[in-house]
Image 1: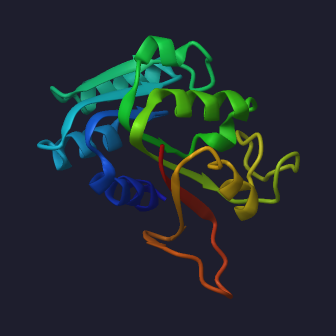
Image 2: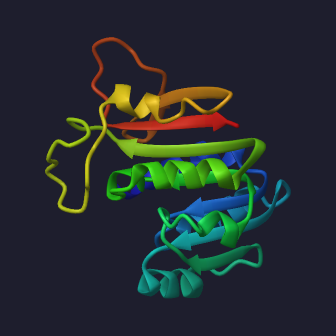
Length: 184
């Protein structure tokens, strides 16, 4: 599972440029990967997570001069005013934890500069309003519901993660995680 998480950041790295937001950054390894991997293209990484203890760990273990770790709720409607706008937003494995999905999607849109890139991933499941086997997931979207999240964006590419690889959909293959790459 760790390899799958790390692979999302490797997948997203070529898209990262300018001011980057890593929303729901967790322990901070991905923010650190982006800051190191894209040191010439990235001016700043703002890494936000809800959990203070996790952020203390991130600050200690993944300190980097370009990273600022901040506490925040991804669905807090005041987040855009607090953080400003970004050239790139990364948001991995967050959507399924948020009850107010409209607030999250609105925040992402408002915080992304025109021409900016959003890279968002989420596991697939039985759909909105359906129970999941994961105790901390509010819901898990179907692939169709996942694609509908990005209607406001000018350009959208949907990929599917299978293990540590990403691909366009193929018939007969079951995918468990979707990843949207969206340009505002």
